[in-house]
Image (spheres, rainbow, N blue to C red):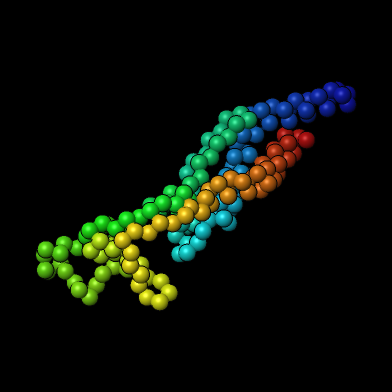
Length: 172
């Protein structure tokens, strides 16, 4: 074979590799890149919200790839979009274990969990001690949207690197 035929064969291999594998190599590079972007814009108090963010799934076929990246805390939606939390009229622990006030054996006047709902009040600790409120309204931080806006650069770079490696492996 001559130079033109060799070039055509190599370009054919590259085209086939891109058609068959580009979705997979790109999504495997882009999902972790997006997760890093998301974690960089997630509001942090305790780190629990950021720590709950994970890549749930990745799928690909040919030149297409998809990933699902999401937070996994009860309050993630509230933190992103905002809203109002209202107290219930009971004593309860943030993990759902409830104290039965009618049963004196289970009542402990000295122990009320730090994020408890107490007789119609929300309670949380902070600077200066504990704070009480019947409801708390919080503006959303829209951190998911901020991540989506910030992602094209890092995700594009990740995909570009993955495609470059794919082309090199295919003989380019």
